[in-house]
Structure formats: structure tokens, C-alpha cells
Length: 396
Image (cartoon, rainbow, N blue to C red; front, side):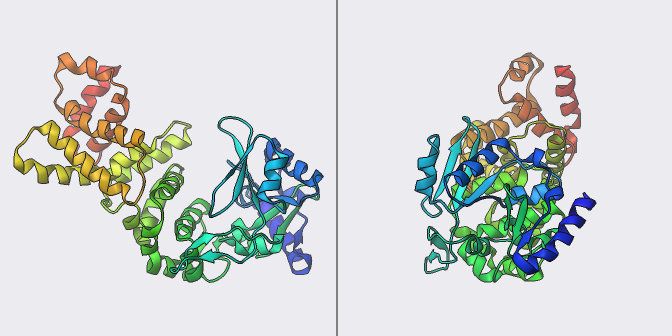
């Protein structure tokens, strides 16, 4: 809301004096997770500094309810683990603690880190477990809008990097030299695009140039980590805009190398955004199936020249495309299995007899396969419009 952002910006004048911005009214404390507050207070009581940090502060200042709450503290991971019995230590490159509150809910706690990191020959960070002060921790973060800390006890936002000013002006600014920061962790390029679209922000030209020149660095990132990043990229209300930006800056080639922009993909991403806005579920299996559909068709046509069983050719084509995709972005077995089901059922939906129709409707993947067919009929395959209507009526 405008009044909150103006207040935050005025408060930022205090940054020049002591880095503390007293903007109590700008943060609605009702939006702060009670468990996160409990963690901070417990750490404080044990004699440690502890603050809410990152995206949750950015969202609170914008008047949004954060999805996740992260905490930064002066306590070491081992000390945090000892204080909270229901917790676990994770990571080697970045040592973190997850404090568990349920099977699906945890609060992530990280120790203040110094600016010193251990890098490989190509500049990528391989260890970042040298601990430091709050100020050092702020300067080792990636973007200024994500380097804001909130002191719950004193109702203060702590800003060492002009993050409030960047947030007020809707700008994505990197802390440090973009070329070096992207070398340290190429995933920051993906994050830059995601934040740009999410916040409707402008991006520093130096960042844009660095992304275009260094997109190839994503090829060195573990496939499992890129899978998690892809979920964040496309499971939101701005999926279509994110895809456009990834194409524009050349990052898509290093996430989905077999994927080219089509009206089918555009239609699906707009539909995904609509579903999320309406509170309907979405699954990564559906998006992966759409992104790789053209590649699967191309591979099928290549193999079909051998005139073998259509079913066996479909299986082989699917496996080849999925195998190539997993070289860059992981596809868990459950996901690749569902993608195959969606693809294999397309021929059945196009040619199934009335007798077998009801049996097909009972298939656990029918709904996804049906939605897939409908979106095809509304984009790249208009000749399937009548068939899509047939299945729609059959379900009524």
C-alpha cells in the first residue's frame, strides 16, 4: 500500500545515521507468524541476536502475508540445534537449521555469515560457513530488497544496503559486483528474474547485462537445485511473465534446453496463473509435460520412421526427452511417470471409442490429460476442439 511505502521511505532517512529504521506502523504484526516470533524470542532469551530476514520483511513492508519466515542469528547452527530439540541440521555448502513445527512446517534459521567464502576455480562458492556479524551478513546477501532485517523486540527494520530505498523505488539492485556475485552462485540470476516479475520492478542494467553474458553458468548447477528453483519460478500468479523474461535473457536454454516458446505454453502459463489466483491446485508434472511436448513429438517422429509399435515408440520417445531434460533440471520419478501418462493418454483421448471412454475417465491421470487436450485444442491443435467438447460433455 502506498501509505506504507511512503512511511518506509521516509524512515529510510534514519539509515544515514545509525542504520535503524523505526517503522513500527509500516509492519502489521498480525501478519508475522507466531512460531517465527517464538523462535526469535527463544534465541534472544538464550543470549543471542536474532532477526526476521529477507523476503518475509520485503513482503511485510509491501503489506503482503509472507509464505515463509527466515531467521538470521548470532548463534551457531550447533547452538540453535541444541536450543530447539525438534530441529535438524542441514546442508554442507550453507549450514542451516530447520526447526520443525509439523510434518510440513519448519522455520529456517541461518547464522550470520562473514563476507569470506571458499570458492572453486570457476568462482562458485563451495563453502560459506565462516560466521560473522549482522552487518557482514547483510553485505553477503544477493539483492538489497532481500537484505532487510526486522528486530521484533524494538520494532525496527535494520537496513545496511539501502534496501528500503530500492523497495520504495521498485528496483532490483545487487549487493556488490553482479559479475562476481553470479559467479559465486549462478542461481542468483534466476532469483533476479523472479523478483523483478514478482515485484513489478526495474532491474539494474548491469545485472541484465551480466545475466545475458553469464547464463551459461547455470549448466554447472546441480539438477536437483534447479528443480526447486523452477517450482518457485512457475508456481505463482506471474508464470507467463517469468517465462517471457527467461526467454529474453537467455536463461530458459539452461533450464529447458528442448523447449521453444509456443502458443500452447503461453496458454498453459496464463491458465496456471488463473488457477493459482482462484485457489486451485497446480502440479509441476503438468507444466513439465507442456514444456516438453513439442520435443516429445519431434523425437516420436524421428523414431516412427522405423515403423515399430506406436506404443513402444511413444515410450522410447518419452524416455529420451525426459532423460535429456534431467541432465539440466531434475525430474523426480513420480513426476516423470505422470508426464508420461499425460502424453500417452493424448492418443487415447483423440481416438478412444465410446465403449472405452468411461473406463478412461476412471484413470487417475485422466483429469490432467483432459486439461492438456483442452489447452492443445485452444492453441496449437484447433482441429481437436470437437474432441475436447466430446470429453467435456461426457463428464457432465
